[in-house]
Image 1: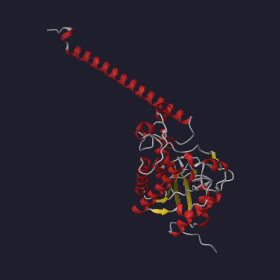
Image 2: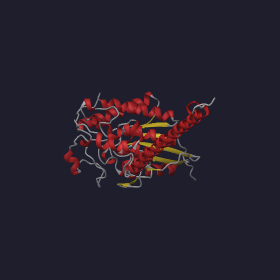
Image 3: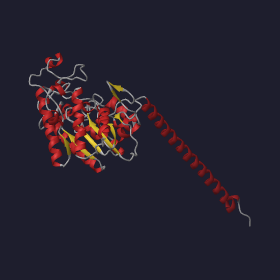
Image 4: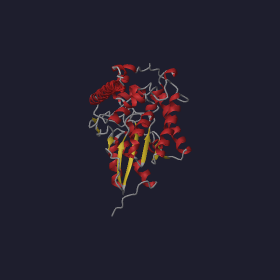
Length: 365
Protein backbone atom coordinates (compact mmCIF):
# COMPACT_ATOMS: atom_id res chain seq x y z
CA UNK A 1 0.00 0.00 0.00
CA UNK A 2 1.38 3.42 -0.86
CA UNK A 3 1.42 6.42 1.52
CA UNK A 4 0.23 9.84 0.63
CA UNK A 5 2.75 12.68 0.70
CA UNK A 6 1.33 14.02 3.96
CA UNK A 7 1.55 10.57 5.49
CA UNK A 8 5.16 9.96 4.42
CA UNK A 9 7.31 10.00 7.62
CA UNK A 10 10.48 10.73 5.67
CA UNK A 11 8.85 13.74 4.05
CA UNK A 12 7.54 15.02 7.39
CA UNK A 13 10.93 14.58 9.05
CA UNK A 14 12.67 16.51 6.27
CA UNK A 15 10.17 19.35 6.52
CA UNK A 16 10.57 19.44 10.31
CA UNK A 17 14.36 19.66 10.01
CA UNK A 18 14.04 22.51 7.53
CA UNK A 19 11.75 24.38 9.93
CA UNK A 20 14.18 23.90 12.82
CA UNK A 21 17.07 25.06 10.60
CA UNK A 22 15.21 28.24 9.71
CA UNK A 23 14.46 28.94 13.38
CA UNK A 24 18.07 28.37 14.35
CA UNK A 25 19.31 30.68 11.60
CA UNK A 26 16.79 33.30 12.70
CA UNK A 27 17.86 32.91 16.35
CA UNK A 28 21.53 33.27 15.38
CA UNK A 29 20.69 36.35 13.34
CA UNK A 30 18.83 37.89 16.28
CA UNK A 31 21.74 37.06 18.59
CA UNK A 32 24.25 38.59 16.17
CA UNK A 33 22.06 41.70 15.82
CA UNK A 34 21.74 42.04 19.60
CA UNK A 35 25.49 41.58 19.98
CA UNK A 36 26.08 44.24 17.31
CA UNK A 37 23.74 46.65 19.10
CA UNK A 38 25.50 45.94 22.39
CA UNK A 39 28.91 46.66 20.84
CA UNK A 40 27.50 49.81 19.24
CA UNK A 41 26.09 51.05 22.55
CA UNK A 42 29.26 50.33 24.52
CA UNK A 43 31.41 51.81 21.76
CA UNK A 44 29.30 54.96 21.69
CA UNK A 45 29.46 55.28 25.46
CA UNK A 46 33.21 54.69 25.44
CA UNK A 47 33.78 57.33 22.76
CA UNK A 48 31.48 59.79 24.53
CA UNK A 49 33.33 59.19 27.82
CA UNK A 50 36.69 59.56 26.06
CA UNK A 51 35.78 62.85 24.40
CA UNK A 52 34.10 64.15 27.56
CA UNK A 53 37.29 63.44 29.53
CA UNK A 54 39.43 64.97 26.79
CA UNK A 55 37.39 68.19 27.10
CA UNK A 56 38.27 68.53 30.78
CA UNK A 57 41.65 69.09 32.41
CA UNK A 58 43.81 66.26 30.97
CA UNK A 59 43.68 64.49 34.30
CA UNK A 60 43.79 60.70 34.57
CA UNK A 61 40.24 59.38 34.61
CA UNK A 62 40.20 58.22 38.23
CA UNK A 63 41.67 61.50 39.49
CA UNK A 64 39.22 63.55 37.43
CA UNK A 65 36.25 61.60 38.80
CA UNK A 66 37.56 62.03 42.34
CA UNK A 67 37.01 65.75 41.76
CA UNK A 68 39.66 67.46 43.87
CA UNK A 69 42.80 67.96 41.81
CA UNK A 70 44.33 70.87 39.91
CA UNK A 71 45.16 71.23 36.21
CA UNK A 72 48.22 69.08 35.41
CA UNK A 73 51.50 70.76 34.50
CA UNK A 74 50.18 74.22 35.35
CA UNK A 75 51.50 76.91 37.67
CA UNK A 76 49.42 78.27 40.57
CA UNK A 77 51.22 81.44 41.60
CA UNK A 78 54.72 80.05 42.19
CA UNK A 79 53.64 76.45 42.81
CA UNK A 80 54.00 73.81 40.09
CA UNK A 81 51.18 71.27 39.62
CA UNK A 82 52.46 67.84 38.59
CA UNK A 83 51.06 65.39 36.02
CA UNK A 84 48.77 63.84 38.65
CA UNK A 85 47.09 67.17 39.45
CA UNK A 86 48.85 67.61 42.80
CA UNK A 87 52.25 68.94 43.91
CA UNK A 88 55.57 67.23 44.50
CA UNK A 89 56.36 63.76 43.23
CA UNK A 90 54.33 61.90 40.60
CA UNK A 91 54.48 58.48 42.18
CA UNK A 92 54.80 54.91 40.96
CA UNK A 93 52.88 52.14 42.67
CA UNK A 94 56.16 50.43 43.57
CA UNK A 95 58.34 52.34 46.01
CA UNK A 96 62.10 52.08 45.83
CA UNK A 97 64.06 50.68 48.78
CA UNK A 98 65.33 53.07 51.45
CA UNK A 99 62.61 55.56 50.48
CA UNK A 100 60.18 57.26 52.83
CA UNK A 101 56.94 58.29 51.17
CA UNK A 102 54.84 61.11 52.67
CA UNK A 103 51.37 62.30 51.64
CA UNK A 104 50.14 65.73 52.73
CA UNK A 105 46.44 66.60 53.02
CA UNK A 106 44.81 69.96 53.64
CA UNK A 107 44.05 73.29 52.00
CA UNK A 108 46.00 76.32 50.81
CA UNK A 109 47.93 76.75 54.07
CA UNK A 110 49.61 73.39 53.29
CA UNK A 111 49.99 74.27 49.59
CA UNK A 112 51.13 77.90 49.27
CA UNK A 113 54.68 79.16 48.73
CA UNK A 114 55.86 75.88 47.15
CA UNK A 115 55.23 74.10 50.44
CA UNK A 116 55.64 70.57 49.06
CA UNK A 117 58.84 71.32 47.15
CA UNK A 118 60.39 73.11 50.12
CA UNK A 119 59.35 70.40 52.54
CA UNK A 120 60.90 67.73 50.33
CA UNK A 121 64.14 69.71 49.97
CA UNK A 122 64.32 70.14 53.73
CA UNK A 123 63.83 66.42 54.36
CA UNK A 124 66.38 65.37 51.77
CA UNK A 125 68.94 67.79 53.21
CA UNK A 126 68.87 66.16 56.64
CA UNK A 127 67.49 62.64 56.16
CA UNK A 128 69.46 59.45 55.61
CA UNK A 129 66.48 58.15 53.66
CA UNK A 130 65.35 59.36 50.28
CA UNK A 131 62.04 61.15 50.85
CA UNK A 132 59.20 61.34 48.32
CA UNK A 133 56.34 63.72 48.97
CA UNK A 134 53.05 63.92 47.14
CA UNK A 135 51.27 67.13 48.05
CA UNK A 136 47.58 66.34 48.13
CA UNK A 137 46.83 69.67 49.83
CA UNK A 138 45.20 72.18 47.48
CA UNK A 139 43.39 75.48 47.84
CA UNK A 140 39.79 75.52 49.23
CA UNK A 141 39.92 71.86 50.30
CA UNK A 142 38.30 70.52 53.48
CA UNK A 143 38.38 67.36 55.57
CA UNK A 144 35.80 65.91 53.16
CA UNK A 145 38.21 66.58 50.30
CA UNK A 146 40.98 64.92 52.30
CA UNK A 147 38.88 61.77 52.65
CA UNK A 148 38.24 61.57 48.92
CA UNK A 149 41.88 62.25 48.04
CA UNK A 150 43.16 59.66 50.49
CA UNK A 151 40.77 57.03 49.10
CA UNK A 152 42.35 57.56 45.70
CA UNK A 153 45.97 58.05 46.74
CA UNK A 154 46.12 55.28 49.35
CA UNK A 155 47.13 52.83 46.60
CA UNK A 156 50.56 54.48 46.61
CA UNK A 157 50.93 53.31 50.23
CA UNK A 158 52.55 56.35 51.83
CA UNK A 159 54.49 55.64 55.00
CA UNK A 160 53.15 58.79 56.67
CA UNK A 161 50.14 61.04 56.06
CA UNK A 162 50.35 64.63 57.31
CA UNK A 163 46.89 66.11 57.95
CA UNK A 164 46.52 69.89 58.16
CA UNK A 165 42.85 70.86 57.99
CA UNK A 166 41.06 73.52 59.98
CA UNK A 167 39.77 76.72 58.43
CA UNK A 168 38.00 75.67 55.22
CA UNK A 169 35.53 73.47 57.08
CA UNK A 170 34.16 76.70 58.57
CA UNK A 171 32.50 77.39 55.21
CA UNK A 172 30.30 74.32 55.56
CA UNK A 173 28.27 75.82 58.38
CA UNK A 174 27.10 78.94 56.50
CA UNK A 175 23.80 77.47 55.33
CA UNK A 176 20.35 76.82 56.73
CA UNK A 177 20.21 73.67 58.86
CA UNK A 178 17.86 71.98 56.42
CA UNK A 179 20.35 72.55 53.58
CA UNK A 180 23.37 71.19 55.44
CA UNK A 181 24.66 67.84 54.14
CA UNK A 182 27.11 65.72 56.10
CA UNK A 183 29.07 64.93 52.92
CA UNK A 184 29.47 68.70 52.27
CA UNK A 185 27.61 68.37 48.96
CA UNK A 186 25.87 71.65 49.77
CA UNK A 187 29.29 73.31 49.32
CA UNK A 188 30.29 71.86 45.97
CA UNK A 189 28.79 69.36 43.48
CA UNK A 190 31.99 67.29 43.53
CA UNK A 191 31.24 66.19 47.09
CA UNK A 192 28.14 64.32 45.90
CA UNK A 193 28.98 60.66 45.38
CA UNK A 194 27.09 57.69 43.92
CA UNK A 195 27.85 54.85 41.50
CA UNK A 196 27.00 56.85 38.38
CA UNK A 197 28.92 59.95 39.45
CA UNK A 198 31.91 57.93 40.63
CA UNK A 199 32.36 55.98 37.39
CA UNK A 200 30.97 58.04 34.50
CA UNK A 201 32.48 61.25 33.18
CA UNK A 202 29.25 62.03 31.32
CA UNK A 203 27.11 61.53 34.45
CA UNK A 204 29.47 63.71 36.46
CA UNK A 205 29.54 66.56 33.95
CA UNK A 206 25.75 66.41 33.47
CA UNK A 207 25.10 66.42 37.22
CA UNK A 208 27.51 69.26 37.93
CA UNK A 209 26.22 71.47 35.10
CA UNK A 210 22.50 70.70 34.93
CA UNK A 211 21.24 69.07 38.12
CA UNK A 212 23.23 70.49 41.04
CA UNK A 213 21.85 73.60 42.69
CA UNK A 214 23.88 75.32 45.40
CA UNK A 215 21.72 76.40 48.36
CA UNK A 216 21.55 79.99 49.56
CA UNK A 217 24.37 81.07 51.87
CA UNK A 218 23.26 81.93 55.41
CA UNK A 219 26.16 83.41 57.37
CA UNK A 220 26.35 81.93 60.87
CA UNK A 221 27.82 83.66 63.91
CA UNK A 222 28.25 80.63 66.22
CA UNK A 223 30.40 77.63 65.36
CA UNK A 224 30.42 75.44 68.46
CA UNK A 225 27.96 72.55 68.43
CA UNK A 226 27.26 73.20 64.75
CA UNK A 227 26.84 70.42 62.16
CA UNK A 228 30.19 71.39 60.60
CA UNK A 229 32.01 70.88 63.90
CA UNK A 230 30.62 67.36 64.20
CA UNK A 231 31.50 66.51 60.60
CA UNK A 232 35.03 67.90 61.03
CA UNK A 233 35.55 65.52 63.97
CA UNK A 234 34.05 62.49 62.24
CA UNK A 235 35.95 63.08 58.99
CA UNK A 236 39.27 63.14 60.85
CA UNK A 237 38.42 59.96 62.77
CA UNK A 238 37.39 58.18 59.56
CA UNK A 239 40.54 59.39 57.82
CA UNK A 240 42.76 58.13 60.63
CA UNK A 241 41.06 54.73 60.59
CA UNK A 242 41.49 54.45 56.82
CA UNK A 243 45.16 55.41 56.99
CA UNK A 244 45.87 52.85 59.69
CA UNK A 245 43.92 50.14 57.88
CA UNK A 246 46.21 50.72 54.90
CA UNK A 247 49.32 50.24 57.04
CA UNK A 248 50.34 53.91 57.06
CA UNK A 249 50.94 56.29 59.97
CA UNK A 250 48.65 59.33 60.36
CA UNK A 251 50.11 62.55 61.79
CA UNK A 252 47.72 65.28 62.84
CA UNK A 253 48.71 68.93 63.02
CA UNK A 254 46.93 71.74 64.83
CA UNK A 255 46.16 74.72 62.65
CA UNK A 256 48.34 77.83 63.01
CA UNK A 257 46.41 81.10 62.85
CA UNK A 258 46.52 84.65 64.12
CA UNK A 259 43.90 87.40 64.29
CA UNK A 260 45.07 90.49 66.21
CA UNK A 261 42.72 92.08 68.74
CA UNK A 262 42.54 95.28 66.70
CA UNK A 263 41.59 93.50 63.49
CA UNK A 264 39.18 95.21 61.11
CA UNK A 265 38.77 94.54 57.42
CA UNK A 266 39.78 98.13 56.69
CA UNK A 267 43.04 97.82 58.62
CA UNK A 268 43.72 94.48 56.94
CA UNK A 269 43.19 95.91 53.48
CA UNK A 270 45.40 98.91 54.25
CA UNK A 271 48.21 96.60 55.42
CA UNK A 272 48.54 98.33 58.79
CA UNK A 273 47.99 95.29 61.06
CA UNK A 274 51.50 93.86 60.80
CA UNK A 275 51.02 90.70 58.74
CA UNK A 276 54.30 89.86 56.98
CA UNK A 277 53.11 89.78 53.38
CA UNK A 278 54.51 92.68 51.32
CA UNK A 279 53.49 91.14 47.98
CA UNK A 280 49.92 90.28 49.17
CA UNK A 281 50.54 86.64 48.27
CA UNK A 282 47.23 84.73 48.52
CA UNK A 283 46.05 87.31 51.01
CA UNK A 284 42.49 86.93 52.29
CA UNK A 285 40.57 88.83 54.98
CA UNK A 286 39.11 86.89 57.90
CA UNK A 287 35.63 87.64 56.54
CA UNK A 288 36.25 85.22 53.68
CA UNK A 289 35.38 82.45 56.19
CA UNK A 290 32.91 84.33 58.40
CA UNK A 291 32.74 87.04 61.02
CA UNK A 292 35.84 87.62 63.15
CA UNK A 293 34.22 86.10 66.24
CA UNK A 294 32.97 83.09 64.29
CA UNK A 295 36.38 82.38 62.75
CA UNK A 296 38.20 82.74 66.07
CA UNK A 297 35.76 80.39 67.74
CA UNK A 298 35.78 77.90 64.87
CA UNK A 299 39.55 77.68 64.58
CA UNK A 300 40.00 77.18 68.30
CA UNK A 301 37.22 74.59 68.42
CA UNK A 302 38.73 72.65 65.52
CA UNK A 303 42.19 72.72 67.09
CA UNK A 304 40.72 71.44 70.34
CA UNK A 305 39.11 68.64 68.34
CA UNK A 306 42.44 67.77 66.69
CA UNK A 307 44.17 67.55 70.07
CA UNK A 308 41.36 65.45 71.58
CA UNK A 309 41.40 63.02 68.65
CA UNK A 310 45.19 62.69 68.81
CA UNK A 311 45.15 61.98 72.55
CA UNK A 312 42.13 59.71 72.45
CA UNK A 313 43.35 57.62 69.52
CA UNK A 314 47.10 57.61 70.18
CA UNK A 315 47.82 59.60 67.02
CA UNK A 316 51.07 61.49 66.49
CA UNK A 317 50.56 65.25 66.80
CA UNK A 318 52.57 68.28 65.66
CA UNK A 319 51.17 71.25 67.57
CA UNK A 320 51.79 73.90 64.91
CA UNK A 321 49.53 76.42 66.65
CA UNK A 322 51.67 76.34 69.78
CA UNK A 323 55.02 76.07 67.98
CA UNK A 324 54.38 79.00 65.66
CA UNK A 325 52.40 81.15 68.08
CA UNK A 326 50.46 84.32 67.22
CA UNK A 327 53.22 86.71 66.17
CA UNK A 328 52.07 88.26 62.88
CA UNK A 329 55.61 88.03 61.53
CA UNK A 330 54.97 84.37 60.75
CA UNK A 331 51.71 85.03 58.86
CA UNK A 332 50.60 86.64 55.61
CA UNK A 333 46.99 86.76 56.81
CA UNK A 334 44.84 84.90 59.32
CA UNK A 335 46.09 81.44 58.26
CA UNK A 336 48.44 81.65 55.27
CA UNK A 337 52.06 81.70 56.36
CA UNK A 338 54.67 84.26 55.40
CA UNK A 339 57.93 83.21 53.75
CA UNK A 340 59.60 83.01 57.17
CA UNK A 341 56.53 81.33 58.65
CA UNK A 342 56.69 78.66 55.95
CA UNK A 343 60.33 77.93 56.83
CA UNK A 344 59.41 77.65 60.50
CA UNK A 345 56.41 75.42 59.76
CA UNK A 346 58.65 73.08 57.73
CA UNK A 347 61.32 72.97 60.45
CA UNK A 348 58.63 71.96 62.95
CA UNK A 349 57.76 68.99 60.73
CA UNK A 350 61.29 67.80 59.94
CA UNK A 351 62.40 68.20 63.57
CA UNK A 352 59.41 66.13 64.69
CA UNK A 353 60.33 63.34 62.27
CA UNK A 354 63.96 63.36 63.39
CA UNK A 355 63.18 63.63 67.13
CA UNK A 356 60.69 60.76 66.95
CA UNK A 357 63.06 58.67 64.78
CA UNK A 358 60.54 58.46 61.95
CA UNK A 359 63.48 59.17 59.65
CA UNK A 360 67.19 58.84 60.39
CA UNK A 361 69.37 61.93 60.31
CA UNK A 362 72.06 61.96 57.69
CA UNK A 363 75.53 61.60 59.15
CA UNK A 364 77.81 64.57 58.47
CA UNK A 365 81.60 64.63 58.52
